[in-house]
Image (cartoon, rainbow, N blue to C red; front, side, top):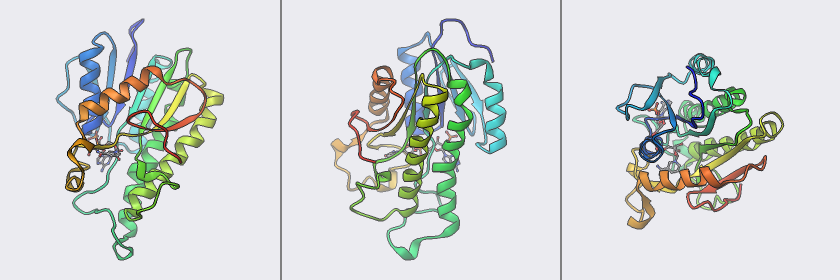
Length: 243
Ligand SMILES: NC(=O)c1ccc[n+]([C@@H]2O[C@H](COP(=O)([O-])OP(=O)(O)OC[C@H]3O[C@@H](n4cnc5c(N)ncnc54)[C@H](OP(=O)(O)O)[C@@H]3O)[C@@H](O)[C@H]2O)c1
């Protein structure tokens, strides 16, 4: 993989997600001269200009892809990590103590906290450079410890709180080793995707966002946020959330 001179590159990990996919579509439409690198577990129908990479998100799979991306060092201006699960056929967010299951909780933590942590650590050298680079890791407001008044969803909440701590901690190391990078734990609001489908019933219509709306909000933050060496926890409107 070789970068083309003077091109800005965006890397989207979790290109198969509703939100990540919308970011790709918007970038392809609005910034056609820029490079888009998309990572997903399976090949996707994406605009022809997008460079696709398939990765099983295992440690070896991530290592392999990061080695392949080494020539991109200093060229990536925005990274979006949009992977995450709330439910699967076997996993449901817990409503009460009796529903907690150790292997399900470990699986949610593996996908929502450990995997993005490994991406963040592995990409440090590639993101380091002269030009600003903004990184949006899809978190959630329910990962806020101080904002937890409703309870429930033990595994998902814990996984996003752990993810937030990883982002906070990584920002300290990035500030030292890759000070051109800004890290953001991003809450997209409730967005109409597979992830939120089973939980949309009580969401007022004007609070259920379309994926393209959230993609536009994320991408406007991606051009304006100051590179200040700190992690930010922001919602879709750019408003800070307390950790
Ligand atoms: N939708 C919402 O209302 C909402 C609200 C708050 C936060 N978020 C967060 O936003 C992010 C994106 O959510 P979305 O709504 O766009 O979700 P989505 O459409 O369901 O996409 C899920 C993503 O997670 C990856 N994924 C799913 N199962 C996986 C597994 N078993 N192993 C590894 N990766 C797996 C998929 O990877 P591939 O790309 O490889 O297919 C895909 O990128 C998530 O982190 C979510 O927690 C969403």
